[in-house]
View (cartoon, rainbow, N blue to C red):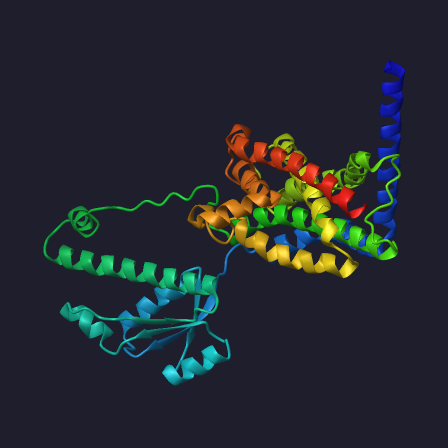
Length: 395
């Protein structure tokens, strides 16, 4: 009996290795799959990291209409121009500014009223108008923040001058103007950069989607080529042993993406100066269940892919969903309950959250126990569903 068991184990391993080798040959001989899984795997992370390399949107051209044309208004305008976010462009009047905005020569308009200097001297409130193009949110945010900071600083300086003229010391005047002092401490993303916030999560999504598309393309091609529309010609004696095919096929993708995934999540952040607090070992510990969950998830869904093009359609469909559900565009805590639980279907949800916590926020691995365990649970569940799916399609 013992010899028989060893023989069965040896037979199963040989079959799985044979399937792994055939899947490897399919991947490296199919130019489309090779492009998606290998070339895109190395190229996409570089593309995303390069596009957002500047981290922030600076020196945004903004039109200035100085109706006051006084030394006080020019000084105020120069303070706005000195900010990192804004570069002022002189405009003759509002019509001129509107035409420049329509041509996208400028993205906002600052109007200093004619009474600006007189209002300040007589102690009356004056109004500086700001018009901003809301079509691009980050441009709007940066322009509005820069102008608001300058206005707040100018208000403080005007108040200090008045109080000093009344005989208060500088310290007393400052305490009167700012009874509560705000000290902002930016954590985990000190440069307030968009790339440091956005790209790490996208890197995890890239792994998820490239594996999904690659496996889908292979499955679609296989079903196109097989007259009986089956996903595979399983070589095991019984289709009850379909798990051997699942494991053998999955091993090919796991071996390839163990290397590519490590490159994406460990090397790329260091190359581009993105947050990288976690050790390589901790990242690989998270990558292990994540890859297994994604591979088995993709194999499960591959039963719905009847041709090569269907895989691309499903890839595009899931890409938008995953971007929204990952928490990169909207906080998970603000999700409606349904969408929050729906997001748990996808390995990317836990992969993104776990990776950001340990690599961008510097958390200990114990902090991501929930995500780590969830990925292992997904790996087991999707392995079972993949087996049932392959058995069903190969009836």
